[in-house]
Image (tube, rainbow, N blue to C red; front, side, top):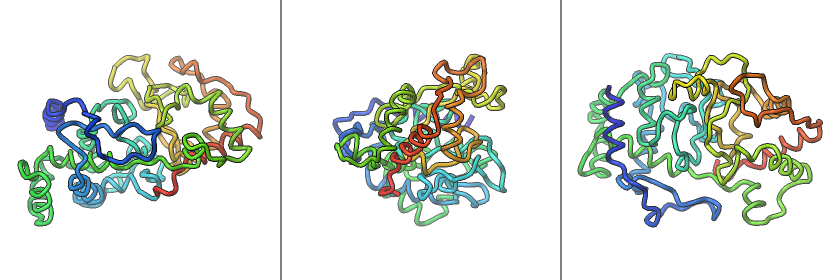
Length: 321
């Protein structure tokens, strides 16, 4: 009920982004302006406060983990684990996705169950296997901290420490995490001769087999697909939202930016390397009634598989990290 009440508050408070007012610098001309709700502009004070909250374990029940525990900057804002680990070592069920460029995502969580970044933080905050806390309990904890009291009053003078100001500041910080200076960007957007022969061959194969889903500046169409990872799925995927059995095993297509830095892979972290992922798609995955018709054997030889893997490494923005 707490989550629903705050969700309703935030959804009614938001309006259509006015992109003409966006002042946040994007990596290059391939990126659109950063969209944001009218009531949560990208102000430096909000971003700074959101960053402090993001890295503070005070947000978890036992003060042992922060948002950054599952989204480490040095791992392209993932955690390097198959699935997330919460308070008291509790194991989650899903791999922690990168939050780089999350400003451009149309919805959040693998099943697309949350449409607004401002409310996304409630998921990990209130989940038993993650932070196991709540906004109602967090507010007095922050109010008892003199520095937070000062920062919230300075940043949100009309609200102070409030559910909206907590969620808005974390969302503002997350929207500021823009990554787009990979060797592929320099090749594709600026015409630099920055790819090797093998990487160029991988780019050709990527355009032939991968761009149906991994397209646009984020290298994702943000659709939902069952990629034949299993014959029987434990995670319902998109079906958790729609309750339609045709959506069983379908999850949001991830962005491939920085993918070489975000192992392990798949929604449950079941593949430890890019080569495993390439092999999976080359085989065409397991048969499942909901498997996408796009997933079929590719018949790549060893040289082509290496080329595709080499290309995926060009998507890393090491300058950002």
